[in-house]
Length: 247
Image 1 (cartoon, rainbow, N blue to C red):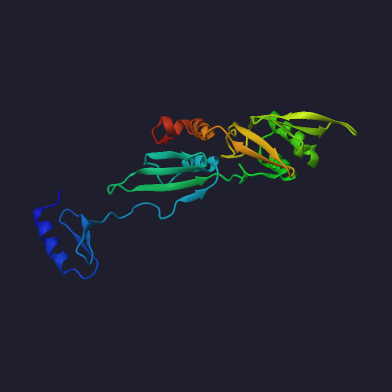
Image 2: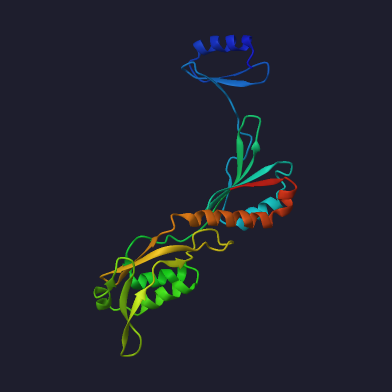
């Protein structure tokens, strides 16, 4: 509680203030008074000015294990979402919380929900998705399409059937699988990429689209896997109460 005398003194100064001033009470608490006479307790930041910018989970682990700067601290590892992790210090005397590290996953920008050319989709499936059975089926269908096949596609509103080449001079109808379970690269590389269901659709112009259909549940899966990764890699630091994980 602020002393009565200090409040009276500050009130008098506030009325005369024409520019910013700093007043310190006998208890050592500092207050700023602006030109409008508003009184605000000053809370200086005692932490780092800029957090370290990383892009991996292993980098966060290396910092925690080899940290000589905050050995007596009680750190918090906050898994903000599937692509962002922060390492925080405890609250200081001014209720400031120091941010030591911000780590952001580097992931490709996959054009979900957009119809793109079959050839481009094959490239994306090869380079930005984990190799799975459903990925191979999609690539086989897309790689054997012809323009007239898509125009003559059979569509029941749930799945489509298109004609693809099955040999040098033969063709056959293939039902395009729906939904398909795929594992795009959408989170940190150190953990297994979460699988989720996608709706696969095609239309004229040799174009196809992947529409996410799991309601974003994969994000919870990714966060849990990130937590499990840290629990394994930082077991001794967690057991010693040096760090705790919030997800």
